Length: 226
Image (cartoon, rainbow, N blue to C red; front, side):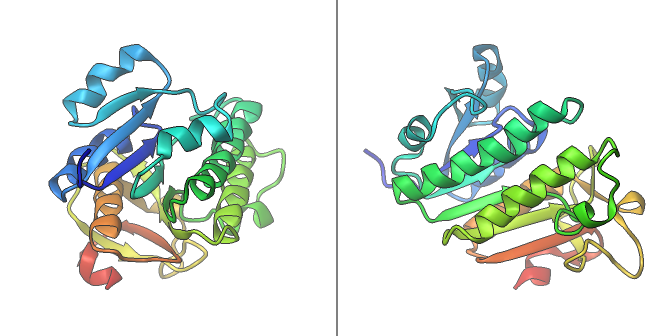
């Protein structure tokens, strides 16, 4: 037994998750990272996290709840990566909903969802035939389920993700993912800044019951969200 609070990350082998794990550990958390394949374990361990092989696309609520048991928080950072609309719905929506239900079943209230900056509104403006629409719809629906779940949630909405080094500095966008008339096609957020945001909101108990859309910018992240 340990008194160290534990965070469970779904999508544990993803780029954001691998960056977030050491940041969470530096803030005093232990991290379990759920992965699909055993061969992904070495990368997770190198990031300081404990790999747990559990395919969230196939795992039921009870299996997820067992993996969550005793955790301080859940982070959903999984994604199908686009392409196949059916798999996008299966991972980005259905798996997210099962994770939300599993958190409630396990008595875990804190839940951080990695979404994207226009998830609230893209379904209203995109043509359903657009290649991005299945992702937009899946994230929109998953976010809505989380908001209505009664959980102590934070939804993080970055812009177009990049591999640039994180600065820890951001610009806060509005609820529609806009900033001075700009839209995500002309803005971006480094994956490392998303990882820093995950660690910050959990470590400092920020943005509870809130959605935060943000891009790389010039304002210290913590100052922007206090």
